[in-house]
Image (cartoon, rainbow, N blue to C red; front, top):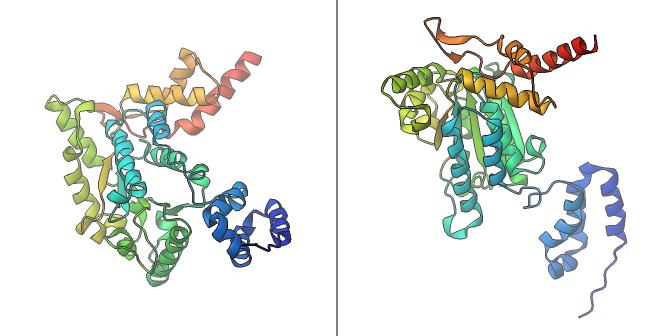
Length: 352
């Protein structure tokens, strides 16, 4: 059999790809329409991997390496005082196996809800997850972030719900292995989340789109006080921080979330569509010190002086009360801007 092919259109489009990143959709359509015989011969995925996907992000293993060993290392080196968060590696490993093992096909999307005080690492852990799964990390076009009140106020709920469905459909239709993040759930308008309930439930497809390989992460300050109270009670019982289990926190987190913000009376909780509630524990002084050292090192200061460390830690206050100054009130959040200032401050003093 002889194949008569005109490669000129391919060469032309190949040049255009280098000029404009946004031509991926056009290139895919033209190649599909004009090279049916070529695609049949070599396999469409092979053609994409060796043309389009060399120049732009595609939904394949090269761009979605799903490197959970990298996540494990990131947690150990960059996230402190959160023993239960390490279980995310096992949770994501099980989900990954359900994607690539036909005998273990998942019946629903993976839904994870992160809870705890501000500054204890919820967003930080989420960014590490994205960095491990996607080559482009949080910049991947297969990662979509929604922000609490900014994206979900109560002015026009019907319009907001329609836009939410459209945006999530758009991302997952391009790649079933997508990551959808809802940040600041506590500031969301109630009942908006129920809009995506079918996407989280046990369905083969919703509007022709399969969500079972996707991950949904909810991030909320809800449950912070309850987590702190539970942890103090566990301490009083002689249970150490590294001995705590999910069951010590999940019931209280679920109860408090069900009556607060975007989770208020949500079917995502009532119908048990959230697979894992991850408590982020309040940080103690030793954890905050580890955060400060890590931040100094990330900025090239590997051996900060005692004075620099003392200056960095001076902005941290402790609670939950003056009588119990056990946990850092703002976690490590304030270090992000404070430590660069300290480095510049002491650099200037040395120059003088």
